[in-house]
Image (cartoon, rainbow, N blue to C red; front, side, top):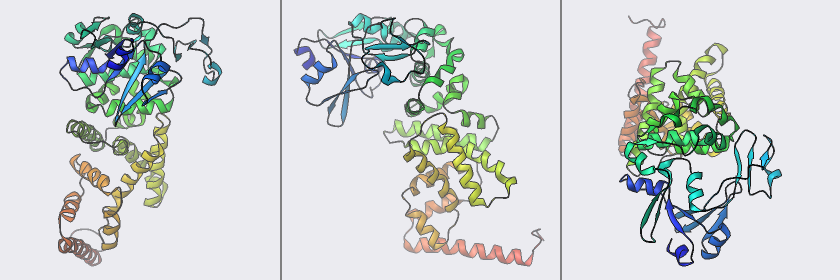
Length: 416
């Protein structure tokens, strides 16, 4: 900010950084708004990189931190209207463009701070702070809405959602994160316009889903997604599985979301692969149940069900392959964790996904699934020395032999 100000530009911290400080929370990051054009910002900072076409911004890297710098935006030229489904490559050369349905396709028209404030999404994100005279500027009664604990969109809600349907998801995210209510006019069109998410790329919807679920309020967010139609455009398979009434599987999802919030609150990392393994577990269970009448080998049935669960979710959000592969490995290891002979135990214990699979196993037990103390066995195995580990494996082997002898003596399987 001081460097921009020193070069006779304006510079403000804007959005979430200001909002969170005013609420007494620790901001996750800081965004800067300025009247300097992206190219002018880049000249001032050797560590700067201009990114984006639809919405051109500058990333300035300081060590591991990235400061995002945006130039003040103005309203679009209403004549730059493009037919729906026209490829973006055909609008090169335009600073602004929007589709006939109202969606912004390119947003690089620059203006002043007053115009910029009115282009922002919600009032609580239109607060600007500068070190020049240490001023806080409020253009849209954002301070009032902070005090009233409400999320209110700037301008006409229907028009703003049509410009960018992801704003509906942002309304949900901020309401959950801040524990605010969504103001009535902001809330009213959401269900009617949820279908607009169909026009958003599945890659962007994946990014937005992650923001929704790893922002520290995953439980509240998921409940809001189920309340609104929006959830059907992000996590439809999971939400539909919830309606089937499998209590244990739904418990597992809720526990996974709660644990995600707790880990983030403790400053720990969260892996999207584990999160999606949990979110899609009810879907996998339903598909496994449906395959029982197909006379498939258990391993084949599992492979088909896992593939089907992942492919169904990919119709909604483009989960990167590295995450789908890891989620599938977590599922596959659930079966392998039950085979506790020496060779199998060593193989599973040395698997790179063992820890995630073990945590998932504990989650299944906590959700109410009866696994005959399997989680505790693996806990003891990890904490034990070599001698104890061999004893644990031997005990399982003896138990299996005793069960085998009993079955031989009583082939009917009926207790005597």
